[in-house]
Length: 373
Image (cartoon, rainbow, N blue to C red):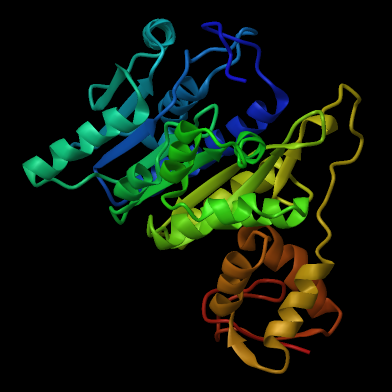
């Protein structure tokens, strides 16, 4: 249930979500700034900016990601970064305004950094904003939109599709699976209308007829993913599951982008939150016990997948990287070269042809050819 108070205690899965959010912004901001002078960060359900225990909320995390990044310490004449924080609740919007002003007293904001708190519902505010761009004949600058509703209403697919219709825009969306699943068979007309808006189709009614819990779950999760790809037009979509302390799926994070470099950075952020599989976080794993050994992923499935895909063929290292990024749950920047290819080469399971005068054994620079035995 959504909290009724202006601020509330943070939950463990929210901390994990903020790890993903913050780590990705740390990578996204300088990546976009390298090629674009203007950028936009939208927090569609911003909240008060602070939790009951003093922890930073997503708006403060976003602002600090820019303010604390060394890339933005250097002046750039055409730079402009816009933060738009949308919050429906008036008391929370006012609280957020104060929190941002408080941050400004300790960390002065540069003149090229523009921010605003808009009190209102996400969909109408975003629709008005995008309509204004259309009237002016303008295009949305490279944008990262964090769409984080408490339930299944207020984030219609058509608004996501309008944001993602611009080529350099990405979305991180909270999909409230537990709430969606609980009310899927409800006969209330208003709930059905919310579902039609959420999915952008009435196809969810097929999932409501599924009695096997696993089939139903997969149907719901896959339908939303398919709609993000087919209707919102997002080229790459990645999910991350959040499990509550009752061992039930609370929600999924869906990340959508047109850019495989963005996908790569998001997979890194997700593996930061889940160092074992990069796909989920459970509140039940939170403990005050001292961890002596950092958990590590099982890379055996990756080795098997690589041999199955490429065995006996001489292929560019770039093809291997793309396969790991686009067709496996693993992160090509984190798991491929040092963790997988080096031991496979040592075990004579990998033949490597490096470019003349470039690279040494155990490295795989651009232009390298590999053959899996």
